[in-house]
Image (cartoon, rainbow, N blue to C red; front, side, top):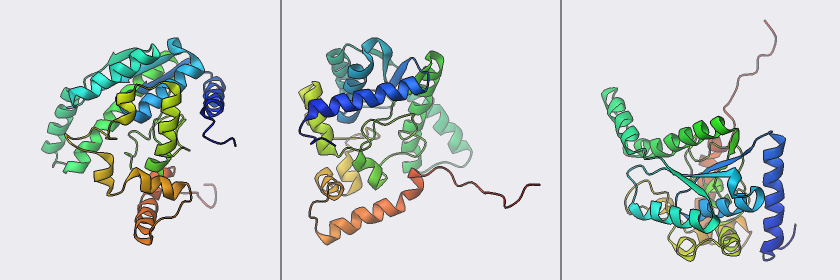
Length: 248
């Protein structure tokens, strides 16, 4: 594999891979959620490079979100010449939450995870209506620590960034022309006001990147990442299925 510092060559490899995913599925294009963050912006740039902007649908899905997120999503869409559909899921989330409360209620984290699951439901409805595939935006740091919502942001058809550390995603983003404010903003899932990825994980992306890239880490940090990886293994597997030992 070429050195990632040759980002141009890596972008060509990822673009070819995206095209093969679309073509092998007989799809017409791709849809992705555009959050205004680094990962989705990088995915958007890769999709445009691979397919052209006319075969990519970007979707902003505010759900009690900060106005700056939609502003940054529009900035990214403009930079790559993308159509941007905006679907406000706030009312849908609140309605579902009221129904769940009537059935016994849900705790804070469970409610937060409703948002990415509603977003993925929306993306699949749009994709199926167009013969598109759904692009996921998770990177390797999120996947190894389980920092994603099962059947939420991990529910997708292909993940172009799944093999890259956050550091590497930032290199790709700069080479693709992702707007600087988006590249430099603190990573956040946007689930709650003031929430950041690193404060929620209790780890920095630099630490997780070091783990992924085989660089030296102190033992406490290494074991913390290992615990997160082991504890989230179920999120990276297909659902367990019983295999009958004989046919009835």
